[in-house]
Length: 339
Image 1 (tube, helix red, strand yellow):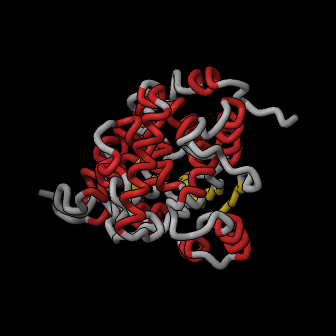
Image 2 (cartoon, rainbow, N blue to C red):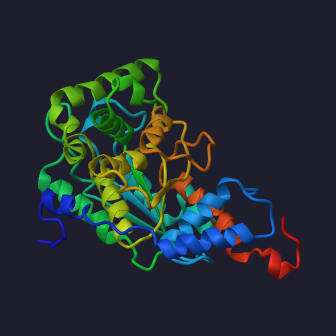
């Protein structure tokens, strides 16, 4: 039997206690440096906030992004058998092979922004249970999936992006969001891989049925993840939590990644202080979910691919922000008169 750090959910909950905070000296030094750079105050807008945020987690006023890691987790969902996706479940394994062969969008983006890409397939031959009939996962299965994400994070990384592949996982993400933040199923349910109107109505009903079947999910974020989620979503939760323990900043990807992060936010306010939203996707509910998390996205390009693609694309924005903070001359260095 594989030994992992989470023998039970109590151990996961314990990992949310005493989380590291950003380095106060690094934050103060970055703010001071930013105020002296050769530009009018706030002339770089949100790039300045982004760079200072990153500097605080790296503990230096002049950080660099040199070792970003992108993690893609793949899992299969029992609820996919209900026709919630325009693609069959076997596409999950086929896309994993495509990732490994370097043929997917995430491979091109990771290469472009010099990010290490690691792909983890989680028991693709054993889909989770259909959550309209039973909890998606047992406690042991959930803890093992969280541990997969936790253990996948490179402790030497200086930035993390997490993404996913899993036919049916926008349905699981919508159900988790509904459980955590309430409202109506239609508020969170979108077209995913391109459903038509009739299929969208059916999918919305399945999301609503999931929460009706598991009212406990509305009372405990980890029960929401266990009963309604998937292994790849749980792995993203574990990776984001591990990054916090290692003070590694995180760029969130799309709706499904944000649902994984939302579990931590709901379990402990402030648990996502080390995370910034890389983008807002075209998937219905993502903007609403980011608002619930208090996250303003860096990009809005109508993407809805998953795979970590929007988060990795945002690495370029972060690198630009950090380069300005760390590389620009101060007024004194450049011999330029300040205001």
